[in-house]
Length: 369
Image 1 (cartoon, rainbow, N blue to C red):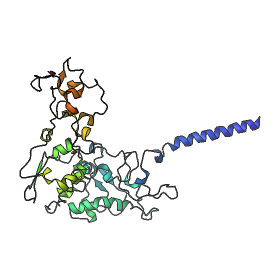
Image 2: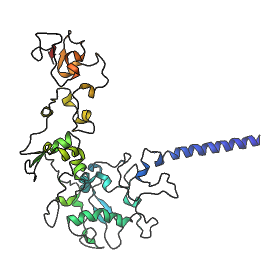
Image 3: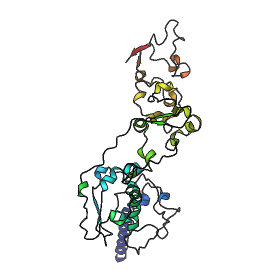
Image 4: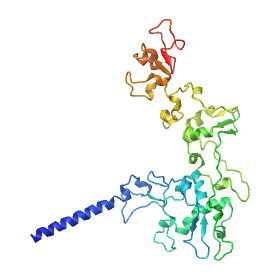
């Protein structure tokens, strides 16, 4: 009997331990839907040999860092490094408001696991005698993030630009920035470029359409810009021009190589309309986003046959009223090809197979909605 009780006790302990381990292991990040190669250089990382990539350049689906600037703290006191200097006050919200141009929160919080945004000290050790020398210490991490922009902006990198000396009467708490926001940058509707092309020097770029219609993100074109573009405190520098087609080639590589006239003209162009390419959008299609039909290739020419997109139609399942024309009882049961020869919906329908005197569009097989 005693032996039975001991065995039962051992089973209970093992079961409890197993359940505890299982509940604990659910929190481990390797069970999350992440791409291991973003952080680990080997196929099977272990605790002893994690083969971590130092400060990887990645944008994970699991990251919860794309918060709005309104959610960000306005001012942050950085005092972990205070020895001979007063704490540095960082205008976090003002920086966050403009971070979208370079990638959002991940610009600074670049090595963040899924979950809340971690402080820099969580990854970067403040001690100079740190145990992991494969990544910068806390001092180096802060300075790497700040110096490059401030060097272009103020042209000064001496310590007192950000750090007041201990006991200095000039210590600024930067409270004047609390409640202030960066002035809103108005998005231009269009930009007209004068190029060096001899025959067709004018390129009209419809900025609003690329953002609101085609879904282009700010960082697709502006990922390498900094505050100094607008805020050079010493002198107004000329904006460094990129290679002419650098921003366009991602979507328009074929046109750039073979069809310059798609963008270049002798005069400013009107906005794009589907009617210009021979496919005037009617009531139903005009409300659709470009990607519904064009998927990833927004500018790709599609077949005008409805079956190109609508592959699973069955006879009688299509509501012809969505085209703006409600078929009458005499025509509603006909096959599409009876009026649309060879199912070519880009051409006007034909009535010749059934009628000698009726023709479209003078005679319509129903009523307009």
